[in-house]
Amino acid sequence: MSDWTGILELDIEDRQGKTVTNNVYFQGAFKIMRPVYHNNSQQPTYYILNPGGGYLDGDTYRMKVTLGEQAKATVTTQSATKVYKTPQKHAYQETEIIFKKR
Image (cartoon, rainbow, N blue to C red; front, top):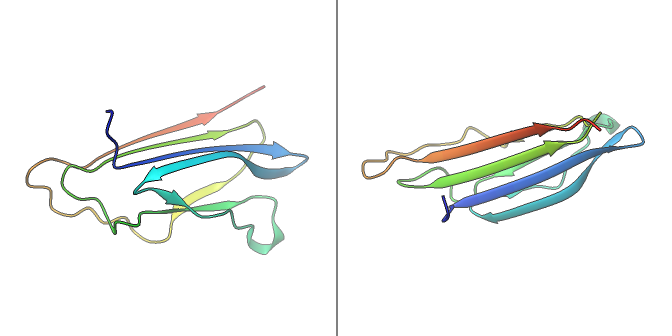
């Protein structure tokens, strides 16, 4: 697909025992908040945002998350993702998660 409603690419790596963002890119109706380290942990939580309020007729989303070796993270949304009626064309999401090993 060439014309995505939203794109999110997130690269995460371990740096001396703490998981950090190496690279982040988002475009369109996909956003991501800065990582939150709950209870002073070394593991971040990333919250994905959909400023459009949900998936509509014909929406297409692509998400790619890459974790380096020993990286640990939680990737979630703030709330349930709403998918509205799609009478003309279905909504589509493609998710790719890559676990790297050096």
